[in-house]
Length: 84
Image (tube, rainbow, N blue to C red; front, side, top):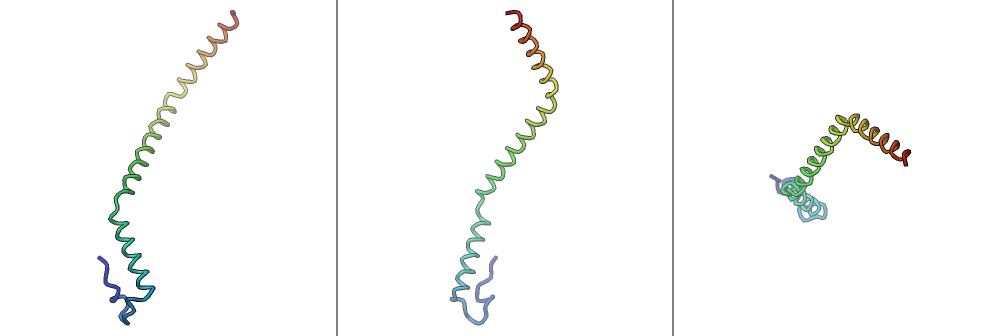
């Protein structure tokens, strides 16, 4: 997958500070590609997003009916408190 550092630097500076930094970055990049823990976080984020969309769709679908029901309950409560 990765070429040897000597292929990038034919003058033989494979032990230089820049070459060591490059090898370390290449190892970190390879480890990040092999790591699958981040995928789990993304999957959870997608699940939460789907649940949020389902909740919003439900609220918008029955929102006017809920408004009418609560207005009716409020009017019943108002009339019953006036009788007291």
